[in-house]
Amino acid sequence: MRSPDAEVAVIGLGVFGAAVLWRLAAAGVDAVGVDQFAPGHGFGSSHGGTRMFRTACLEHPDLVPLARRSGQLWQELAEAAGEALFEPTGGVLIGPRTGHVVTGTIAAAHRHGLHVQVWDATELRDRLPRHAGIGEHHAGVWEPAAGLLAAEGAVRAAVRVAEGLGARVRTGTRVTGIELVPGGVLVHAAGGAVRARQVVVAAGAWLPSLLPGLPVRVLRVPITWFQPDDPAEGDRYGLADVPVFIRELDDGTCLWGHGVHSGTELKLGLEDHGGLLREMHPDGDDRQVGSDDWAALTRRLDTALPGLAATPSRAAVCMYPITPDRQFVLGSPGGDARVVVAGGDSGHGFKHATGVGEVVADLIRGVSPRVPVAFMHPDRW
Ligand SMILES: Cc1cc2nc3c(=O)[nH]c(=O)nc-3n(C[C@H](O)[C@H](O)[C@H](O)COP(=O)(O)OP(=O)(O)OC[C@H]3O[C@@H](n4cnc5c(N)ncnc54)[C@H](O)[C@@H]3O)c2cc1C
Image (tube, rainbow, N blue to C red; front, top):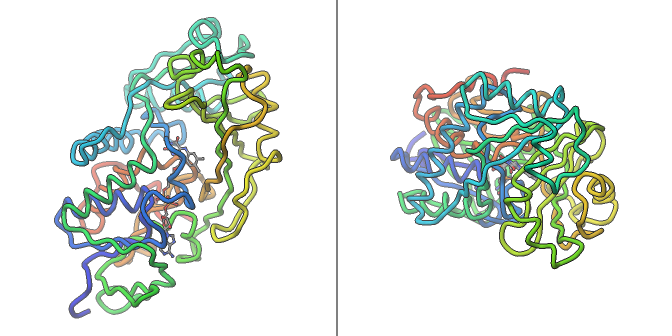
């Protein structure tokens, strides 16, 4: 290809693409980021105010090095942006002692020598009295390094810092297709194609529409915010009382969220590996949240986290693009270095985004990533 418009085109400026753009620009690579919306929008997977950061990754022990590196890079990004993006609050993973949340977290921590504390049921009840219904068979794993990342704020910061380092950004531009040509790619978009030597596809829930061969399904995930039933009780539901948590309930569902961070609301959600969450199309209009969405959650809150209003004060729809093994898709399909995919986040990717950005920038430049990534390769199916 003669005279490309950019060395690398990055499709999608959610948290993955924004971090990729930042790391490419930091490495001196000429890159252009393209998104159909503006960074920090609320139509993908990177909105909702906050995201949990933790390093003892129950989803896969090999994610721990990526999470640790991401933690360092979040700090670097915050310094470059001149704003706080991470609040170290500590976080707790709760559930049956033999359940996947507690055992997965402990396994990841032990494998990598992470500092965590394991609390038995008595200690859990003493330390976190807002969490009700704790039985003798329950335990908690406290990770002091966990905390809260800014969601939209982090996306905007990464894009802004990338632009400051020379990256270009085209917003309001929908990519309609990727065409492989000798020596590069044509990224077809409204307003004309972008010619680049390589493309990074960080399209979140839209990944299957650009690369249909990847086994990614999109789940619709409601996010809800609740106030205490009695407003005078607000002080008892702060982050110290309800720290960032994931709690596996005895029926196998997982409650997640955190106490009042800023304002007056707790942020809460519910998920499972079964039928609670339905599939959606990212371009569809299934974005209204109603009582059907929060009924399953509020039923469980009555016994697990009582004292909250019966209905949420706010709600939004987010999406999980999930893969069959619930690990990310990171690498070049078929080994073709012209295309690098960063997606399939399966609902646990935000914390890793800066590390993902660095891995992708390494792959683009033909450098071996410093953390294990083989288990996320797009050709593993
Ligand atoms: C409710 C909820 C809670 C979560 N909680 C956590 C948490 O606590 N901790 C954690 O680590 N992770 C969490 N996650 C997961 C995390 O938020 C995601 O892993 C992350 O946001 C994925 O980012 P992304 O950039 O891949 O996707 P997105 O943010 O969706 O970005 C994709 C971008 O691509 C753009 N795009 C797509 N197609 C095109 C096209 N054709 N042309 C132009 N632009 C295009 C979109 O407009 C979008 O901006 C949560 C997710 C949800 C839904």
